[in-house]
Image (cartoon, rainbow, N blue to C red; front, side, top):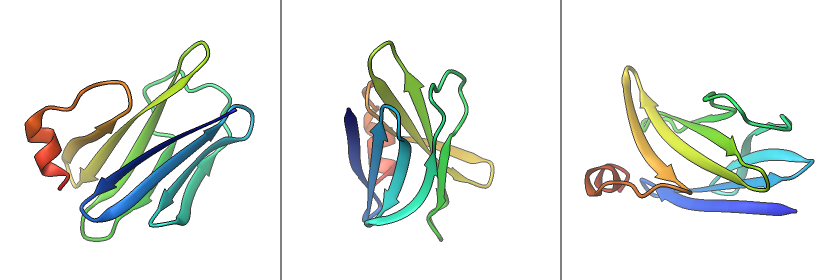
Length: 100
């Protein structure tokens, strides 16, 4: 089974595809930037990341459920960490504005 997540971050199209037994892949503007084959994402650890040049580093933290996977995405720029996307939580208006 495959589940995908898509969002735009400062004009960059981000796509994450998770396969049950094939791992998880991160695409930026259609280019494969990172992948991981960890079977279960249990800890609060970023399994995927991509350098987005002048914007910062995008970190993806998958969260495994019993039968589904959700993700949280953060933009790291130095010591500043911004919450930019969640497939299971609603972002605040301030957080949404920071990603545009």
